[in-house]
Length: 617
Image 1: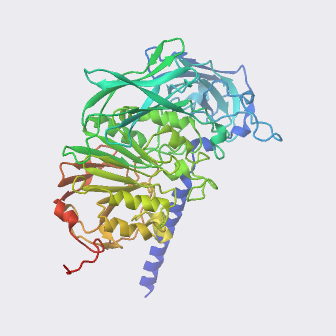
Image 2 (image 1 turned 90 degrees about the vertical axis):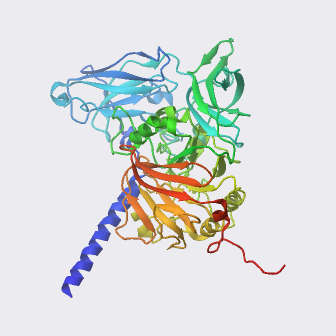
Image 3 (image 1 turned 45 degrees about the horizontal axis):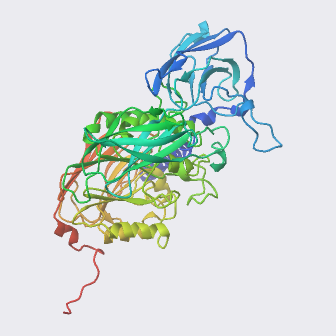
């Protein structure tokens, strides 16, 4: 008896420990590295005893959008918590901003640095010698840069030296193109960023088949200002001018053809500023029988190749995931990044950093996104969840920086067809429950799929509206988003959705074909004929800090992995689909299954999937 009590007590303590760990993980989601910097606590103490010099001063002389800069540091009174902040624009004093409230003066610094690094990062003897050098990578962000040396750590920074100014040769250049599917299968959209407003230049795309005639398609231009943000830090120290966001629509494309394109801005004096040349392959027409390869992941975020910003190990897997996709790009046709895009959390400079990181991917294949809590959620802003995870962005930045074929940008749900696939992308940050506008969209998306032409029906959402063994969901007792399955489950079953894929939980998990918590199929790796239920997959291990699982075994969970990774779906034809889970560290497959079936298997009835029939003639 005593042994049983000790065993129960030990198990309870184990669960309690995991609960505390889970709560800490959830809390850290909104903790951006820049949030640790006491911008309002800065003391100005510029001293002749310290200096900072950056070289080279001019970047991009060969049209590069990214270059490495060496920062030389000298300080006669060094300490282990001295750090370098990179500021852009270079003038970061309080003379560049106004207070939000006339009763209060602006802070000493009006904006957070775009990145930071400790002076002793690659110089272990800095505290003794006071001498150091750092290699930092800069990207073109439409303004100049300066490097500031602070003592006093991050919480009570003391500014002691500021460097010379560094700038790109053309800071306004068109950069970081992002492809996306249009509303029609034969349309591709190109979105990019520049420093040219519509009163300064006309934006367009020059494009055409390789070796064929080139045509010009004009682009629309959008931007937003500080007043478009819903709160701090996006509206205060995290604000940075986003430049201008341009989108062009390339129409009447032939299926599966390679096209080249380049971005152009025709200035008022008649000269044209060009980007480099890019290329993409157009989408197959709906139902086309060809090899089609899809990448899906969530919660990747961004990371710095120079090691900066990593105060709290925020998104350590991001660069590995990006590298694996770039290395295998010739075997990828379309990418879905299903929410929690870059974790800017109100520090807007990070969106440029992210679009630069994914440029080799997004410039070559459609890069489709879904809305996550770190893009959209803010109190009293219309989001379903009343939290502050977006850092005051309230969806504005993501909806402007990336184009997707929505009817309304703030209602970030949409459908898109890619050959034999139909994708129904939900917006989990808006109400999806039965009777809502979004619920009706989801049912229409399922119902309108022609399963003879598009046999592979995929549902996507950021939050886990299906099944998850992640600890924070287990603590809530829902093993998925509360209310998530209530109304959607009958739609998945009625319309025979093959796979439902989610992010939000930073791990990987795959279920059996499940309906109402019951496995409808005993097979685990090679499915033949009707699935009889929907396979639910969590693919939130794109890069952000990992989420632990509950110690409980759930009957519907087949495979779990506490690591970084992404999915690859390969449709060989109308009858064969390969699903693979690959780890970001090496790109190797660690879980997989196949589905083999005919059209009649989709038509066949299973539990709650068909209406009642009658023998009456």
